Image 1 (cartoon, one colour):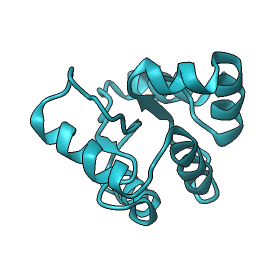
Image 2: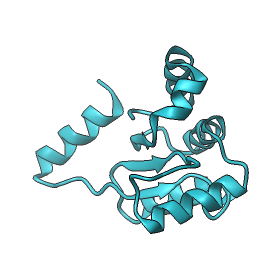
Image 3: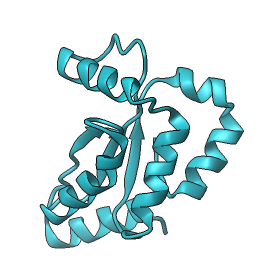
Length: 126
């Protein structure tokens, strides 16, 4: 059973709903992302939703669009996001991480390459 299933089963047993905060990876900077992820977990997050920055986030509102822009200015790519997940996993192997973003970067990387890389990094879903 994967981390997401275990998390939802534990929440269901306790009669709780999941707290799933979202942050854009690399905003305000890539070095801060793993620390922000740990702070969210310490503050009660059950699952983390980590945004993959994209250059044309038209389906997002202005706050997330600006967050994407800041992360991209720091050079954050899909590979960077996976590296940040891997770094977070060095200190937390329990909290599920779901990646959120646009399909374009995954298509560029290749579906199979992305799936293997995301799994190796420790992502639990997309």
